[in-house]
Amino acid sequence: MTGIRFEEVTKAYGDRKVLDRFSMTVHPGEMKILLGGSGSGKSTILKTALGLIKPDKGQVYLGEQNITQMDEEELLKIRGEIGMVFQSGALFDSLTAGENVAFKLREQRKLSDEEIQEKVEEMLGFVGLQETVNRMPPDLSGGMRRRVALARALVGNPKIMLYDEPTAGLDPITGRTICELVMKLRDLERVTSIFVTHDLGAAKTIAGETAKQSPDGTISFIVRNSETPGSTRFVMLSRGAILLEGTEEDLCATDDRYIREFLD
Ligand SMILES: Nc1ncnc2c1ncn2[C@@H]1O[C@H](COP(=O)(O)OP(=O)(O)O)[C@@H](O)[C@H]1O
Ligand SMILES: [Mg+2]
Image 1 (tube, helix red, strand yellow):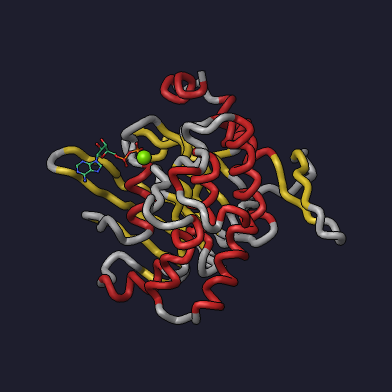
Image 2: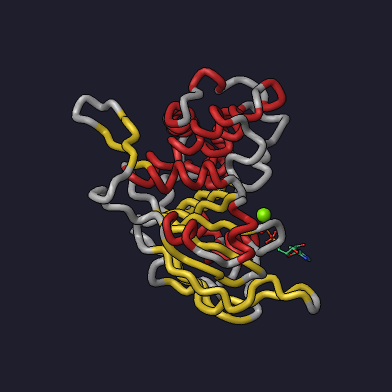
């Protein structure tokens, strides 16, 4: 398993500091929920973990590897092990759902067509959308498109998942479906993850429940209590730096004005 570590990461655009000595560790198998207002630097943090944005200062580690100075070729290999659900969740509208999921595999040219087809069916099956394999994204609902984007990110069985506001704009029931998939990956596959969101309801669901699989394969979601081991923590971001890190209780107990306003 692979963890993620940001060490004093600083990034500025012109004279606007977007990340200001941002440090955070996500241990293997752990999840951090990153909360913060619009423009606080959340998407930028995820992009530095993929090497899409290079910090001006500071280091980013994936497992033992320092990726900060890696070149594109090395980064491509690293990115093969990371799944990212982008903020827009954008799919290629001219490709079927199945071809969207297959895209990375076709690029890698490692698997045969049959093997790719098998993978695609497995991934679409995981998000409960096997029947959409030949459908075009514009014909799918917003929630289905988001699930296809999730399936696409899961190709290659990533050890790390980065989610950028995956429930934004979805109705609560569809949002719940996404949250359940995210919890399954965290609790049953032990994927290390960062879940960026504006959606406090989704954040509370994900921090407050655990996915459990019974011997017959049924999956249920159990509300945590003081005995459930929990490793999901909240990180509240403001202007590219951490304002508070802790449990939901810590977050709710704070009298910091910025956080209170965010919670209300
Ligand atoms: N390529 C860029 N050039 C200039 N400014 C940028 C760029 N990308 C992001 N920003 C700015 O950086 C700040 C943080 O952006 P972002 O990380 O996307 O915030 P969040 O995801 O928390 O809403 C915003 O003010 C945004 O306008
Ligand atoms: Mg963003």
